[in-house]
Image (tube, rainbow, N blue to C red; front, side):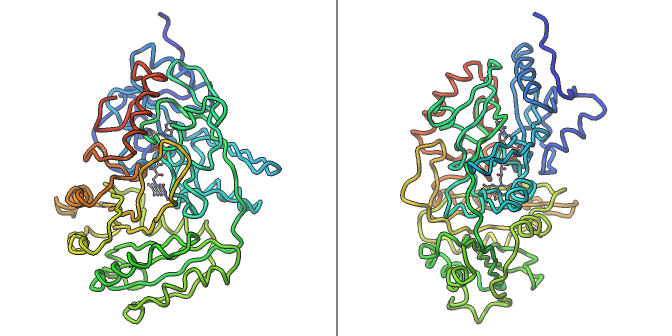
Length: 447
Ligand SMILES: Cc1cc2nc3c(=O)[nH]c(=O)nc-3n(C[C@H](O)[C@H](O)[C@H](O)COP(=O)(O)OP(=O)(O)OC[C@H]3O[C@@H](n4cnc5c(N)ncnc54)[C@H](O)[C@@H]3O)c2cc1C
């Protein structure tokens, strides 16, 4: 059989630029040691089709990256054909219909910038450089997602290159099972999404941030308070706390209490975050800022300059939790005591999802979300720093309902990430659409 000619730039293992191309494809600076056999840097959809056919002809499995922000570096698979979609980053807005078409390599911040100019909105990821491809596929806890729903709920269609090289369009009417899977399968999706069709929203008229910072000695009382008030916090507030060894304003180990708020007026926002000023421990806070109007672009960029530093070796892990936090406070103290230096941090997020969501692959969430982001730079860390995130989440397994694919660590610690019935349905779809297992599936399980 004549091998299918692969378009786009193709790099074979051993080529001079191969290692640099692989490194550039990942936000995480870890080197897990896995090397694909080929990297195809697609420039157009035809390159994707050709690469899928070449993988079939040469018996290679396919791994995919869009923005390369998978903490777990899901696309680093030994001997695979790595399809790098970062250059498929077009944004086409249809203002009249309130929709957009975007390539999977489009960055969250670039999409928001294009929308802001037109007073439109989409629940993009919180950091500028996150790729919309992986973000949308795994569900997508985006800006204002507590009010608007997960980002994938605003995906109204996908164009997918399947394992046989065909291109199909999926909506709720046409190939609905593919759209069902694309809303939450994340790193286990069994095709290449080359275009997302999005429903846009009106831009909130006021975007602001409320911030309060406590020294870490107040951890237990502040966390217990946050956990208790969480269910009453309006959906317009992304109430969260970050445990940081270099906390904002105090440059010491502390707990940053954040209330980003997206509403239609400053007054509404002030009312929504008032609970922070009225907290019983407010007098113990080392820093309390008034509600400040800030642009989304500023918040997206500053997150990457403070918490989510590039050139860092990251290991993350997470848990969804339905039970109150009080029995876990000693464990939270252990997490704080053993926390590696910044930019490592721990996130507590008030989620409290709605009672129901549309039927889609994404199907596991709970009242509270906890994630640990172990970020190591340089060579000074202790061996325990390397496994900080995994070890603590493993220890808290009895309190966990499962993990979120956004922060998955399945290669090191398999854990539930979808309702069992949805996973069964997803695997049946995989068997139908990718019978030869051409696309790599979740790490930590067979392809
Ligand atoms: C700094 C930072 C901030 C983040 N903030 C948020 C946040 O606010 N909310 C949130 O929900 N998550 C967040 N995440 C997690 C992020 O959404 C996921 O890691 C997501 O997978 C990143 O998308 P990507 O395209 O950049 O990643 P990639 O690493 O390119 O993709 C991840 C996996 O998705 C699959 N995939 C990607 N593109 C395609 C495609 N086109 N077709 C088929 N499969 C594909 C592949 O299996 C790939 O390995 C953040 C991550 C980082 C590093």
